[in-house]
Every structure is written in C-alpha cells, then in structure tokens.
Length: 79
Image (cartoon, rainbow, N blue to C red):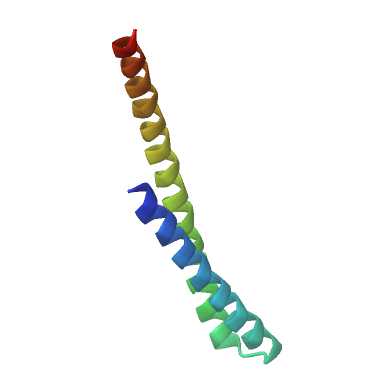
C-alpha cells in the first residue's frame, strides 16, 4: 500500500502542477470562469494529496512497528 500511495501522490502532484499552469494562464488572460474552475480543482487535488500523505504516514508507522517487532523476534531466534 505504501508504494501505491507514493505513486498516487506523485500523480496527483503532477496533475496539480499542470492545473497551476492553466490557472496562471487563465489569470493572465483574465478569464474569471476558468480561474474559478481551476482554483476549485487545485483545492480538491490538494485535499486528496493531504489525505494520501496522512494515510501514507499511518501505513509507514504501522510498517515500521511490525518491522521492529519482526527484527526483535529474529534476534531472539539468533540468540
């Protein structure tokens, strides 16, 4: 799941960058309707990116906990 989340975050960040370019272009051209549309899309993407990062943090912490427990058990077996 960590890999999937990392890939999703990268994809979303790429989409956000592309939308920011469009947003900048719309702002320079003073196209208000597009500014609103792209701003809403960027906001939605940011929320999804934040959500993915939160989930990634949880999954990473769980992974680290299980890895530490596994390593401790492995060390006991070696002793």
